[in-house]
Length: 624
Image (cartoon, rainbow, N blue to C red; front, side):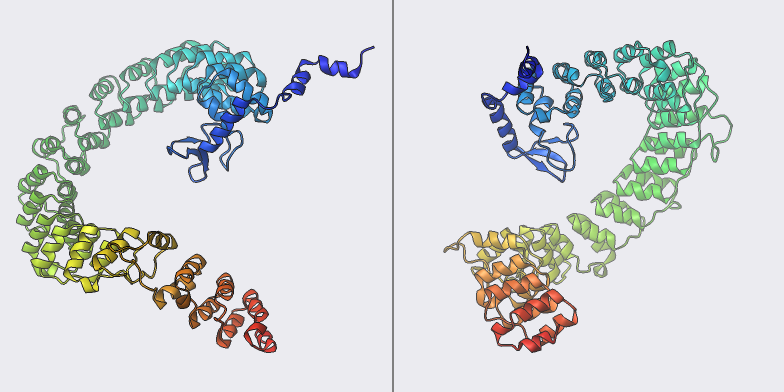
């Protein structure tokens, strides 16, 4: 007679599970998993696992893990992604059987780890996991064969489309041999293969599909991307295209395709074709299209181009194209041509256009503003010689980018009326030579805003220069300064503590106070002002109030601190002041304000503490 226990022990799978932990977890596996968990941390912003030491990362999606938070399966998936041995992966799965999910197979396929796919695929046999498409994108026929052998054939049609799009001809032939051509969207497959220039895929499709066809996108996109052989193949099979074929081929400079389509097709092109070619500087294409136009006109025809041709060519600096369009074709442009050419510093084109049109073309203020901002000195000189106009953007742009020579040109031409207080712009960007010129030549008074901007952006060269001019007015009390290096530098050059900035953060304060003062580095900050504490209380910055209380207890616990916190309704701040400043209490007026705001929680807290402060409980309750 066979006992039930003998049936259990005779079952290899059950017996294996019974004895797997008899010696505990494998030490090497446990240590490796622990090391991975210690080395990486979950980054919720980028949804990845980031290495603590190097900063390198692995995206959760690439590992086949969930995106909404850390996943306990990360060590296994990382090992699979890196292609560790099948023996190690097997040991991990034996130790952590709960990690055995279909996602680990997806990870192996996505990472193109064939040896691990061979290990894992049998464990999820015949499940409809749609893995072939991901496999086809990598082009691994062996991996695809492994998946097919274990019944993973639910997405053969999608896999064929992926192979066609990627141009994996051998993979496509293998999938086609499985006899699923009837389920394939042949039109979409042809369009994607054609757009990417995979003519071999098109030939295979033509052999296997009795209804080989495509949309106009096939030839249009093949022409745009420069795939002449595909264009010829589609043309030989009497497939259609649109005017976009020549237009986009011209845009990308594919002259051979433009010639083929013009000689063998009747769709023709639109003015966009010449416009695009001119904008990109494809002069040979422009010449060919104009020479082969279908009418005898020279301008204002759908066979030629528009003003966008010269405007775009000028903006992009294609001088030869601009000359050809103006001189040979007599084409016209708009003020955008000079404006954009000047902004981008194309001196030859600006001079040519202004000379060619004998001053009749002109430009707008964008020309001089843009040239000045970008520091194109010779263009600025040329435009000024042609009486070009500009706005204050010319000066502020030149000052902001440190183009001193341009600033001097604008000042010399337009006079002092143009020199507004622009020193703040120069200070914010650290352009000390421009600051010196503004103060010493243009004679403008240094503004406090210049110092503020220099401090805010940490421009030490500008700060040193401005401090040398007016040391008494250079402080950070009212400046939005939140930089440790600026506070320490100012304390060092002054030889005494500086006034604490009103809006300084706790992190900066902690960093400033972290280093002890010595003879060469004085204590950096003075006692905070009433305004600093008031701002912290109004903003409900409990951590900042706590920091200031720790270092400046008497100042923080002033008579107005509790009243301000109560008036603002900051219960947690009131509780902090009550616990740490026992001599500070609120006035009846502030209590009334809390009750008026219907802040029940705050009013109840105040009433609970009223007996200790000598206030009448009945009077306090009357406010509720």
